[in-house]
Image (cartoon, rainbow, N blue to C red; front, side, top):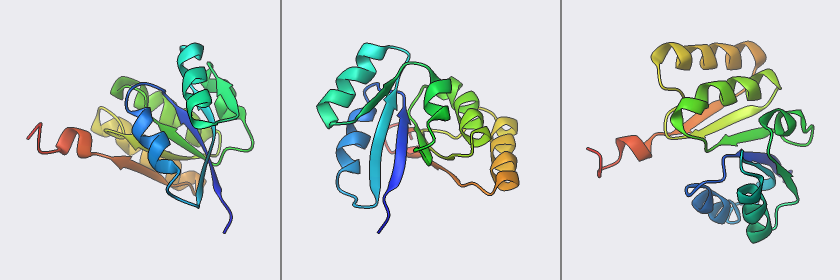
Length: 132
């Protein structure tokens, strides 16, 4: 089975669980990480054996090897990062919410449909039992 090449944007606390669990799936290969703090991205790359480190979101989006962007940024950055990924021809999966407003979410979905790309989100962080 062909592995899906994934680039991670955002290397904060939540990235550990994603980077750990990604090793359990033969279909996924995290090939790059990106964070505004290059040292944080570099630390995650070293810890998880990831070959590429970026500190500029535009650079990870330009990486032709990457098929999917895993967006682990803070919620206010979800919309711009997701839109950049879609415009770059990459599928998107986002932790927390897809966007912070309904209109932004609708724009993400519309662009994905227009480009024939997929989007997904893991809403359990804000819909989980602890917050309910």
